Length: 197
Image 1: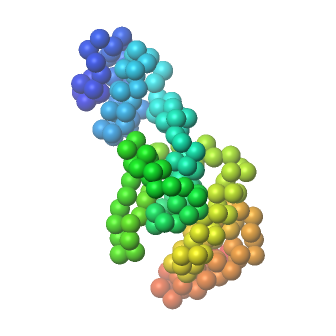
Image 2: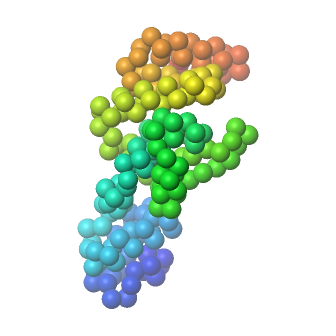
Image 3: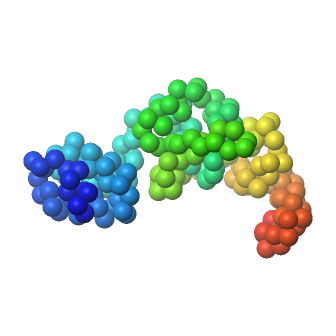
């Protein structure tokens, strides 16, 4: 609450009530407190501010490339190589810069190179929920194609989801069988059973 109060300009109407709302909706995240406070100040202290409102406003102002990239990142639910995301969405690298500048996407490094993922789980959940049924099918189909071009076996678990969501049952079954066998070899028998099922 203290951070929310300090983040709001002193002239904002109903400042204490707004600070309580901001602190509550931010769920203790300093990042979300700052974003909500900034949005509330721009809206002249509207107590109707919420994280959904702020994220919705962010999505509405994204370029088409950036929105496609963010949606695919949210749907995948895991860090992916930036080349895969750019290929699957046919986006330019400027879309990555746009999303990183807005703190909607973040980059990390691994032994497999640079990866991108949604900045926070709440962003991922909100964005994924906004994707229409038809767009989901298309996004997962293009992601599956891009993953297969890179290294099908490294992403077999995600490919199961991609093929299922894009209505490619036969390919989903093949990817599931591969993932199940790999989980069995790693003695992850519960995981193997899930894939075989």
